[in-house]
Length: 261
Length: 335
Image (cartoon, rainbow over all chains, first blue to last red; front, side, top):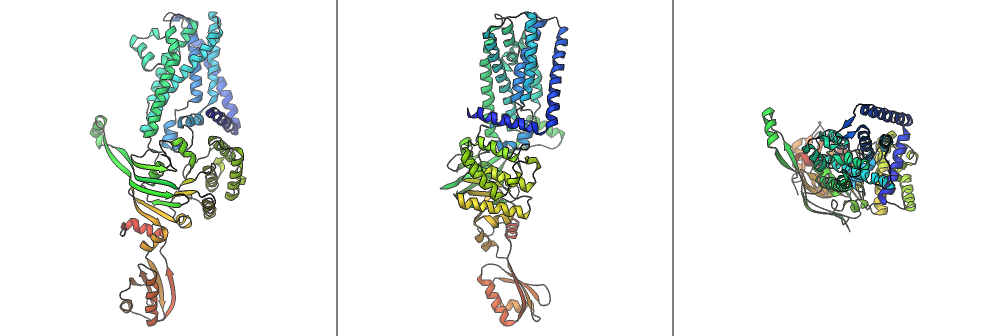
């Protein structure tokens, strides 16, 4: 409850900060909108050329991709850990964070959030909606609740993996190039996993579970029978990975060496 | 009540060592070599509630590392540590509510938003009731003279203005213990004055314990009754400033201008047995370097004046800065 309250306060300040640079705010907003629009057109055009993929037809593939965009947007709105190493470890901002009575990771998240990234989720919904309309899918209330639950699970998976990766910075302040590699692997999650080799399938399910941020939950919403159990595992895998990420973070904080003066 | 209690407090860092050359780099890849550096070496430190303590030492002496352990940022490698009754690292979130921190080179405030917004956000972070917050902040604003700055974004403030706002931010939750790391670095005299006055005031009125590190010895002279000196991770002096001066600041100089010509050896004869060294600077001008003690000065003067009339005289006391420099150059001779 306290964290939620604090979160709203930070959010208000964030909006104020953005408003302080008025033109920047307006242009960013417009640019973001254009970017998302172009993205949308691009997705639809690209997928016009794929007729089917591993037994999934064009609109099903589009649907999966639409789902994939939603957790990613939510994740990148609240977890902006990309320049954590530079800003918090090398420049020493983490010292300040650690002298305040709020859980350190929560502070970092609140200080780096970019809520405007949520617009990307809207694009995802439009893409999904378009595909669902073409496929003539019927939606129950349960499906919408499940979509919500799956999204939450997927966001937790992203969160756990990237928090664990960010924790590496707490051990050594040299820059690591792992994040972009993981990002690229993450993109595999937006295609049906049955098109990959078994080893990759296994890795995407149990090692770096990116199949759970796109394909598994989306395929359940498409076709209730096929990947059912995998889809229902999404929130569970999310909790597991987030827990792992937080463990890495807490250990890293104990190991943190501080920035030199 | 004890503010800080540390026994055998130690922090070690593993430092990665690279071998020279390309071949060395390949060997490093397979087998890294580490060297362990003791930044803080088993120090004992006790500070009572209400003290103002100056923590001094050269760069790399371990000051910042100690402060970071005391504030809960770093976990000690070994030793016992209780600050305000808490284990700073283990009980971090509860503990930091009882301390205020100002790192001179790093801002505690949000760069892009107005100062008062930063304060408001801190009010929420520390969960302060409105009334208490307003009353306390109002007083600080008055004493620190920052009323006109409140609606400005931090990035537009000068260093002196920002520093005063930082102090208010660090004390917003009325902590019983305040850490200051180089609080007056780069500030002009007036701002320094203002800050020192403010610190004395909160120390007197609220009984706030203050631990400050500084390179500016005048901060210490103005504020601290006690000095802790650190060298290579160890405490080499812990005691009052007066005692430090008495023991090492023996270097008092008497500049003498005699009414007639005097020989050096005559003066030396006259003052035999006294802790004094003579230095001739002109035909009639001498400097008497006196080592310890108040008595020696009057004794030397009384013996000399009887023998030759003095035209002009000036007593110079060694500044704390000189003493400190001397200690670092020569090492501790008396402990």
